Length: 138
Image (cartoon, rainbow, N blue to C red; front, top):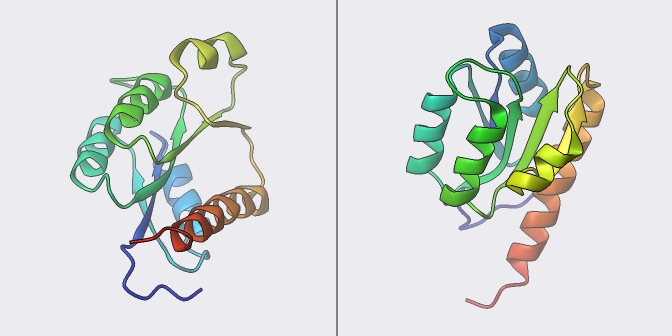
């Protein structure tokens, strides 16, 4: 994928389980043209996203985490980086009404998620964003 004179495309994975966060990061690093960041602390993730909001295109968060839920995190990220696609992942049943109330989740993935499904989903989102970006007149 050619990326001349474009800002880097950032993807964040936030999961309080260290092994999962880095597993997802390694899987998503297979996608050309993206830089993947893994966080186990939602507050650190939020700070990084605030500082780099213009580069973030996809944020993937677990639902249950200490200090703040994935829903709270994605709600704050929507305010900071509205252009980023927000994906919620959970091993638990999450009621659709919660997503509608906050209007901060663009996609939900049920754990365990197949790595190929996760990679394909993020690749599709990044490609769509890059295609839209090339159609803009500067």
